[in-house]
Structure formats: structure tokens, C-alpha cells
Figure 1 (tube, one colour):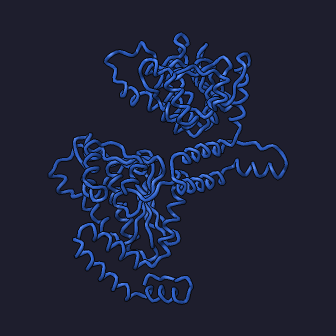
Figure 2 (cartoon, each protein chain N blue to C red; figure 1 turned 45 degrees about the horizontal axis):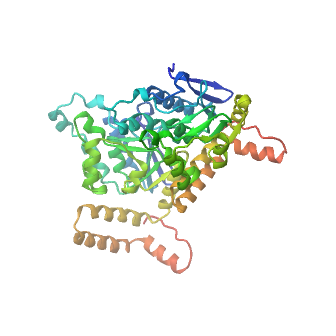
Figure 3 (tube, each protein chain N blue to C red; figure 1 turned 90 degrees about the vertical axis):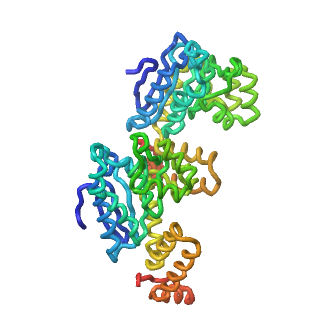
Length: 258
Length: 257
């Protein structure tokens, strides 16, 4: 496994784990760290042994946001040339399921990173927030877009304008997160969910993600056509034969990802 | 380090003593902040396995210091800024909190006692939901806790009539855990605290968590909360010690982990 400066990456039983590793800074994201996260996610996405990717933070917080010191002196030209958000864009091309296990503070860039996950499990007491407005700026890594797609413009504007903290209970009511669990069991419960997905046919999991993502951007008509093609495509897989044969033979399927 | 309270750790218990005896320990915003801070500190401290809140002098707490109230005061903001955070800190605390009600607990002082897990009362102590007498409503979590303790009908009587509730009456209403004679109140509180502080602290915290869930979630969610709580408790040293002691027919020695 490649070693990184600001994150830790490991793999066990088909489940890849990426841990943000700047606990003393509540895992504040600097540019190198974002690149490391994206590199790790991409390499797991290409690794045939990996079926699910889990993303979490070491210490008390998932991530308290971007490293402000790093950007305080930036100007528009430098930002344009730096094109840092291109790294974030790469996260949207990941084909495998990403489960975020979040806790403590999920703020700013940390919240945007969480919104890039497919499923989110939060420890009770977790707080989400976009505090950028308090610094005279706004989210730049997809926050205004992804949040709005999930909760609608009414709540998105309220939260983005006020910078207020969104408690896990509120987040779950608005469909931002999937589950709230006891803090002590965050990783255990996350891994259980990861394992449930890891035993499914990987190609089906993959094309479901692909199709659901299209529902965000496409018209219903185009989305339906797209879904149909993916459905047909799965009938070219060995796992479809295995799945249906196992069902008829009343046994558990053994999916190979082919 | 504190001005309006004292904070002391003794035998695994944190003692928070409201210390404005000349006013029967009336609340000023500084006292809200200091209690909040003390509860936070005790919650995070590994050596603390029980928290006691009591009052110096004759009273437990007489509620808001009315000399701080003027016509420009925004009562809602005072609650949001000072009382709310204090009560929330108590509510979120997963260590057992004992209110040692040594004397009168009136207004927000009554609310403070209600927010605790146990209310030990001196037979000379009393509760008074005094808010209505100055044209206000019970605050600082008062109606939330009171309703859960005695039901809506009783809560309404206590809050609207605003009558003094003596210790014995508090006991029969279920508002007091125990009542002790004033003469040996301190010794009894000490003994009760030591008992609580020697319990399996993590399990006690999880019991608090589960009981809160029981009042605030659906049955389905409650069952899940219970399963997670038992999973966590099942991993503690104290659980192993409890089982081992049972097998060996001896008293368990819990360490709170």
C-alpha cells in the first residue's frame, strides 16, 4: 500500500479504508491532502480486489474544513492557474461505492467531501455546516450544487447564508445522511454496511450508482433510456447468470464481478 | 478558577457547589457559564464517575438573580445564550448527575434540579415553580423534564398554581429520589454519591442514553438504540468483571470502563 503524508489507506476483505490523518487540525483539508484522497480513491477504484471504499477521519472530527492559512493570500489568477477543484471533479468519476463515516465536525470542505460520498453514516452528535460565508466567501468544491440537489434550494440557502450548524437529526430528516449510530460503533456499523454491499454483484452495484447519478442531471426520459441500457448491459455479465441460477436453485449466489 | 461556584473532585465524584450564599445561590450569567464549563470538564474527565450539584449555605438555588433583570432584557436571548447551553450540557452528559437539594430550589433553580438524574432532598428543602408569580413561564428545560417526571396534569398544577412543594410531597410525586433529615443530609449525600461513583459508569451512561431514546424515538429506532447500547456495554471491562464476580460469588469491583 502506498504511503501518504496526510491520510492513511488500507485494504481488508474487499473493503478499502481511507482515513484523514491530521487529527490535531481536526483533519483540515489542504491541497496536498485532497490530492492524496483523490489518488487513493482512484487507485482503489481500479483495484479489482476492492468492492467498497470507506472514507473517515482520525480523531474527534471528520473534517473541520479547508486549511484557511493556505488560501488566505490567494488571488483569482493564481486560483485559475492552480485549478485545484479539478481534483475534486475526479471524485465524481469514481465508479465504486464510497461510504463516508462521519463524526464531530463536518464543516466547509469537509462537508463537501462528505457530499461526494454515496452513503453517509454519522455518529450521533455530528454537526454539519458551511461556514464559508463567515469568512466572506462561499463553498467552491461543489457545496452549493450538491447540497441543493439533495435538500432543495429553500434549506440550502438558509444553511449557506447563515453558516449555521446542522445537527445529525436534522441532516437525516433532509436526506443528507443515511443513518445515525452511537459514536462508539461508528466504524463497526459502517463496516457492516460496507460488507453488505461488498457481497453483492459488483457490476450491478456499479451500474446502479451510474444510473442513480444520471437521475440528478438527466431529464426523466433520458434517465429512463440510460437505465434501460445499463439493465441490458448487466445481462452480458457472468454474475447475472450466477445470480439468477442461484435464485432458481435456491442457493446463495457467488458473485465474481465479471 | 471559578467565581460563582466551587469545583472539587473527591473519590471519583465531581462536586459543583453553587457559591453565592447571600442570594441563596441565585443565577447570574457568570454562574450559568461556570456550571456549563464545570459539567463539560467533569464529563471529559476520566477520574469522574459521578457529578453532584449542590448549594452553599441555606439554599440550593433561588433561580435568576432579579437584580440582573431590567426592562430592556430580551428574556428569550438570555435563555438561548446562558440557560439553554447549561441545561443542554447537563442533558448531554453521560455521567450520573445528582442534585443534592440542601434547601429551597426555586424557579430556574428548580429547573436545574429537574435536569439532573437524581434529586436528593433535605427534609428542610423545597421546590417552587415560581415563574408564574412574576408573570413568566417555567424555563431552562423545566416543562420538558417536569412533564416527563410527573405527567402533564401534575406539571400544569405545579407550574400554574406555583405552590411550594415540601420534600415529603416531592418524594410522593416522584420528584425526589430520596429525602434525608437535614442533620445528616451531607453524610447521606456523600454515601449515595460514593455508591453511584462505584457503579459501572459506562453502563450507567448507556442507560441514560437509552432512556432518553425511549422518550424521543419510535419503537423501531429505540430497539436499534438498545442493541447498539448493549453492544457497547458488552465490550466494557466492567461487564466482564460483573460476570466474573457473579461466577465467583463475590462483589464486583467496577472501574468505570
